[in-house]
Length: 128
Image 1 (cartoon, rainbow, N blue to C red):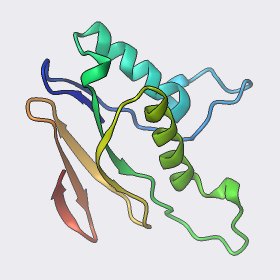
Image 2: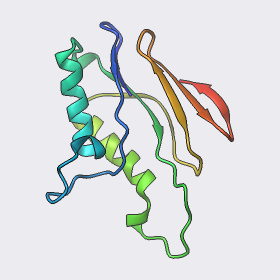
Image 3: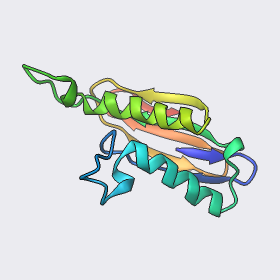
Image 4: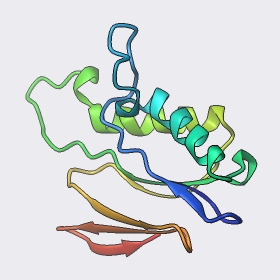
């Protein structure tokens, strides 16, 4: 999630893969390296200022274990790394994060106060 605390403009990118390859750029919101800049542009057009944006991250779980796991199969952790990289390029700080592990999350983001509610079967509800 990204949020501008002055204008209360917020947005969410649900990243599925870390990087868009030249052959697979037909769905930019799907990839961390293209979704984050798109989200920022959309938020700017709605009154947000890039220098005020803050990020909160949730997700990036490794839901399945494979006997012969390769780097390519670590999609959740690679997504988190790619999101951090994209945010660093845009100089947007990550102020809270609940990522990784092996369980799914459901989130709710409130743009009036910037609170991200994360619900999990294992950890219950957390507000960051």
